[in-house]
Length: 419
Ligand code: 0X9
Ligand code: ZN
Ligand code: ZN
Image 1 (cartoon, helix red, strand yellow):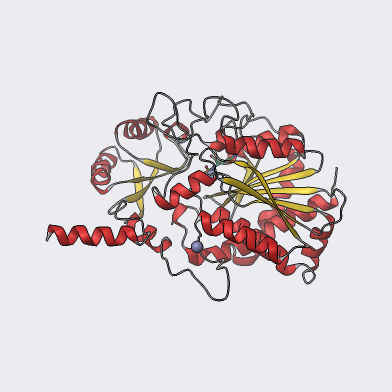
Image 2 (spheres, helix red, strand yellow):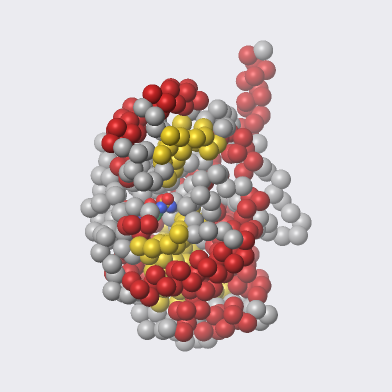
C-alpha cells in the first residue's frame, strides 16, 4: 500500500504538476480591530509558518484593513481557535489551496491555433512566444535583451510601435516583478497581442502605435517566475543568495533607489519584503533601472503591473507627501478605473500608494517618478482576494480586456500631454 501511494506521488510530480505540497492549506482573511488583534497577528507571524498575501508581511498589518494569509491545515485549526478566543473576525477565502493550484498546472495547453493567451505559461514558453511574436510582426515589434538575472536568464524587452527611424515618446510597461502574480505577465502578453492585432483597425491603438513606442518587459523577475512554476507557487522575491542565512531572495519592489529601506520594507533577508543588502543589489532591478536611466529622455510614462487588490496606485509610496502633480495623477487614475469598470463593472480603488495600499519605500513607481517620469503608476489587477494569486485562467481574458481599456486611456492622455 505504501509503495502504491509512493508511485502515485512520483507520477504526479513527473507530469510537471505541483505535487501535493499545498494539500489542506487554507487562505484566511482576518479583520483586526484593536491592538490585541494586531499583537496576535504579529505573534502568529513570528511563531508559525504563514505566507502573507495582502499585505505582504506582518510589518504592514494595521487595523482598518483586512489581512490575507496562507497556512497549512494543522496551524489553521490552531489559529482559528485563537481567533475565536480573542474575537478577531475572520473567514476562509480558500478551503484547499491544492485544488486551485492544480488547475493552473493543467498541462493541456498545446493548441493548434497558436499561442493560448487565456492560459498561464512557463517562462520557457513565454520566451518562445517573445521570439515568435517578434518574427511575425517585424514592422511593429523589436526584441531587446536588457540584462541577465541572478541565475543567468535573459530579461527581454519588446518595443512595440510603428518604426519611424527617429525617436518617439515612449511608455514603459513592466510585468512580473513579483513571481507569484501570474496574471501580470499574462497581461503583458495580452497587451502585445492586442496592440499588433488592432494596429490598422482600432483607431485609438493605431494612433498610439504611430505616435509612440510601448516598451514591454513581459517578465522582470525571471528567476522567481520560473521558481514559482517548479518549486513554490507562492514565491515572490528574486532568487539571489543572502550570505549568513538560508533565506533566499530580495523583494525587487523594495530594492529601487527611492528612500530605500526606510519604511514598509524589511532589512531581514527572511522577510518577504526584504529590501536587499544595498540599493539595486538585484541584477533584475539593475537591468530595468539602467535601461530606464539610459532612455529617460523619451520615457514619458511608467506602468508596473502587479496583483492582487484592484487598485491604481501612483507616487508616493515612501512618504505621505503628495507629488507636485497629484491632482493630475488622481484625475488620470480616476478616469482610467472608470474606463476599466465600464466593461464588466470591476471596481478599483485609486490614489497614492502610501495611503491607498500601504507605505513602502524602494518601489519602482516612486523611483521612476523621482527620475522625472511624471506619469508613473502601479496597477494591482484582479481580484480582491477570492482567489488572490490563484486567479483562475477563466479570468485572464476579462481581466486583460478591462485592463487594456485603462492602459489605453492612460496612454492616450500621455500622447496628448507630452512634456
Ligand atoms: O508591495 C508591493 O510591492 C505592491 N503590492 S504587491 O501586493 N503586488 O506586492 C505595491 C507597490 C506599490 N508601489 C510602491 N510601493 N512603490
Ligand atoms: Zn503554457
Ligand atoms: Zn506585486
